[in-house]
Length: 126
Image 1 (cartoon, helix red, strand yellow):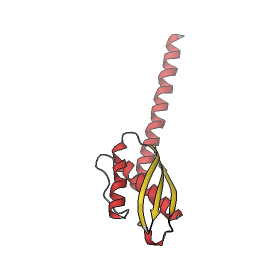
Image 2 (spheres, one colour; image 1 turned 90 degrees about the vertical axis):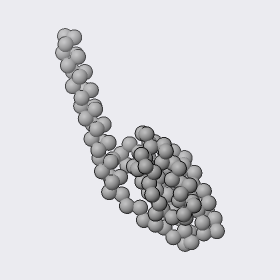
Image 3 (cartoon, helix red, strand yellow; image 1 turned 120 degrees about the vertical axis):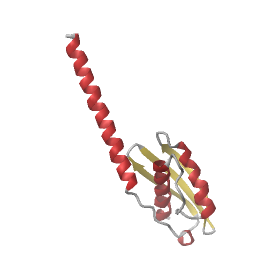
Image 4 (tube, one colour; image 1 turned 30 degrees about the vertical axis):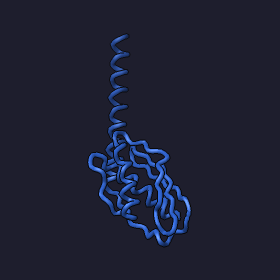
């Protein structure tokens, strides 16, 4: 009886792990296929715009503040990232260059891409 329970538990753990693995693989492929366009900030009215993007296990919710045809602030409200917290520094590059065409953060490429896509979403809402 105990052996049967252990086998059932082992099978459940393997299936659960396979499900997580599939989800991560699917999210990784989704991110690899993402393209981030550039948005002309001069066409966006002053204001605070919210954007979000989710891909696999990475989720980003943020606010972009536009004033006088410039991105003046990007506030990350939520970043479920696994190990990609370093990607959050990409917002400084976006503000400095006033562009979404910036290099992703080495070692946090997927989170960087999702952050860029969330900023694009916010600006497109503007």
